[in-house]
Amino acid sequence: MLRRVFLAAALLLVGFLPVQAQRRPAFDRSSLTIETAGGPRKFDIELAVTPEQMSFGLMFRRQMPADAGMLFVYESPRPAYMWMKNTYIPLDMLFIGVDGRIVNIAERTVPHSEATVASTGPVRATLELNGGTAQRLGIKPGDRVVHPSFR
Image (cartoon, rainbow, N blue to C red; front, side, top):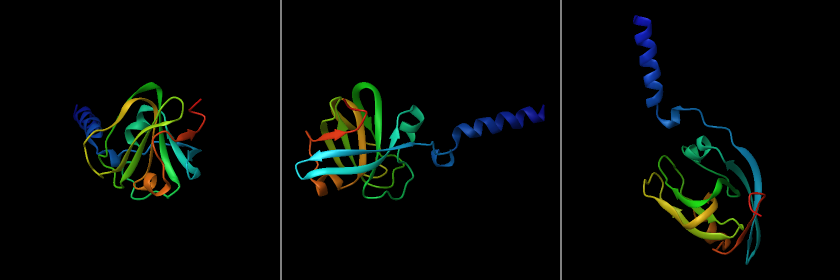
């Protein structure tokens, strides 16, 4: 009986562990190019395609290389809603349509904020880059993202 109580208590505690104590999911890697007025910009990215990967995203990371990012790819076009809870670095969020065109950009999102950051319409994916990257590289809505996720 005592063993069952301890087992039940242990299982209950696992559900309340902070996300950082949970194991980071594995992410496949890829690369993409953003075609801008100033020329092509290449990024090495991680892909977030499963619900587990999407919910973990870039949380708890203290840094990210300048040419890196994470691409959240949705099963079908939909409005995207993101937040910065447990995210330590400011991010630029690029919301991308089915055709690979950037629909809108949320620049320099605030670390740890629980405010919703949203696309302005249905999108196929969201690309997260280091905060300030869009401005530094001249990335704008309408620019094209080249990756197999977009046709």
